[in-house]
Each structure stands twice: as structure tokens, then as C-alpha cells.
Amino acid sequence: MKPIAEEPNRRTRGDVGRSFPIIDCNYQTFSPDRHYGGPTGSSPASSFLNISRDYFRHEARRNFLAEVAFFLVMGAVLAGALVEGARVIIHFLLLPPA
Image 1 (tube, rainbow, N blue to C red):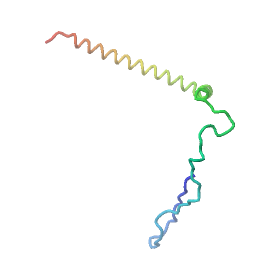
Image 2 (image 1 turned 180 degrees about the vertical axis):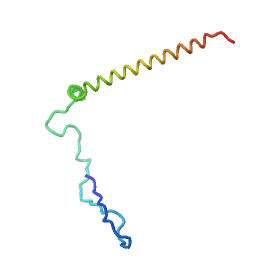
Image 3 (image 1 turned 120 degrees about the vertical axis):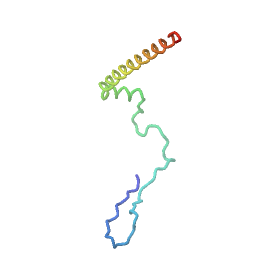
Image 4 (image 1 turned 135 degrees about the horizontal axis):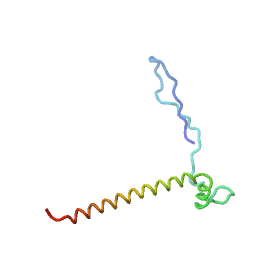
């Protein structure tokens, strides 16, 4: 938990006081020697395959299919541009000298 900075009260022009906000520093820091990694509870650790399977089953099936279709269209446009560029370069190289 981070310290909370409190906004100082707005003072009048003639009032001279503290210019920095009051900070509440009553919190506990994270101690790395208490963290050992791994699952924290009694539930089994989920593998990446199970997490992604659950994600595609429930949340992102249609979004994923739309993104795949968009990717394929962009790939076809790119392939067409590359083929046309290669055709123009080959045509330029085969021209007779002037």
C-alpha cells in the first residue's frame, strides 16, 4: 500500500505556512523474504493452455475470428503489393538499354 498524499488547505495570500502536502506514512512495505513464488492457495495452478482455452471458450471467440479475418485480408493486400513490386522490378530490368 502506498502512502496517501493529502491536499493542503487552500490558504489566503497573507497566510504563510507549509508548502508541501502532508503525507500519511503509516503503511507496511512488501518484504521479499516472505515471498517464495508458486501458487498461494489450495487451488491448483492454472497452466497457460487452460487459461487461454477458457479465454477463447467464453470471452474472445468472435473477436478472435474477426481479428484473424482482418489479418488474412491485410496479408493478401501485402502479398499483392509485393508481387506487383517484384513484377515491376523484373520488367524494369528486362528493358533494352536506351
